[in-house]
Length: 459
Image 1 (tube, rainbow, N blue to C red):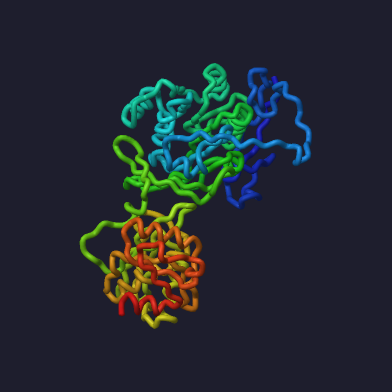
Image 2: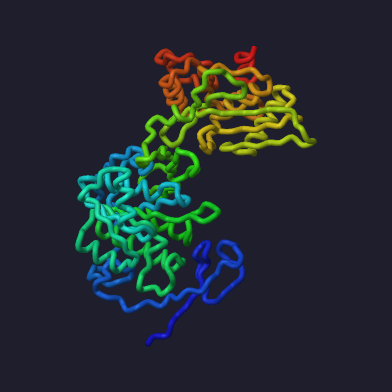
């Protein structure tokens, strides 16, 4: 019998060491090294997707790049337009997609919904966390089950590949990668070596067979994907499923995509019958209110190729204690402090002794500088206790000198505002170059200084 070989792995980044060390030299974390068995069994001929296995293929040889032929692959178009958007136009054959999110956020519901909607394709849904009866109950709740969707409750990769060989699925879904284990690694399921090994086997299968593979992954308490960091490097696309479990809206965000943009966004609403696509998120991000309140403005932003109009809420009140509070939700706190300094220095507004609270409605986290003017208008509206007309919106960046700076793709923002029924939009006058305002039915106000905007709004 062969001697059992062990090694030490960092649970944070996946770095390997021959002996235990206190501080990981790769990521700098303390006490993250654990011992795992790494001895492999003898490879069998049936393990055709085992990394390093001999499958009878001829070793590849280097080719001049000019001699390599390329054919555009036809993407698999799902019925879920939000998923199509974040993937870059559909599912790429042979790709591997990793979906992460908090427990109970709806990852399994989303993937089962996708599996049931692909009626013309054979889909194999492999679950290591739920029984067949549980999956059946969810399937009946979110939609009529189809005969092309097959359910397998298994955690051993060798047994999964045997069923794949018999079924020949066209789409494979794994729920979740942390529950799988390979017999070639003697470590426990969910360990660094097991997650890396199982992912490598599935990746080899995806690339050799051209079958797209979806992996559901757990996340740590810090919000990052559990397992070694190399897991995110191995897959083609990483999607983050975000949202508050106590609220209905969910956001599917792309953090890595080899086949499309990494700044796309998909929005869903969690309902009793599953996840509903939100095709026009601007309507849900803007509060429908009958009365006008101070401290509320509408800003035009972009998430990938999608223009969004979102509501900015501010509350400015005299500081009760000696030190004024500055709090922001969904907006960079450092940028908020910068804008407050600009308002005080360039505008002359005494905000140094005021508590300022800022909130981006809808649970979004926005990093677009085009929201600066909306934030400034919202803060000043609350400070002066004068409401901003509900038909006005803003799309401009504010500089340290109090100047209104131009933003990119302002035409898309104006078109979105016009579509939602706004009558006025405030932008930078430097965006007027090459823009034909006559084709819009919305009044465009262009300014170069912050005080000119406030004079127009509040007189």
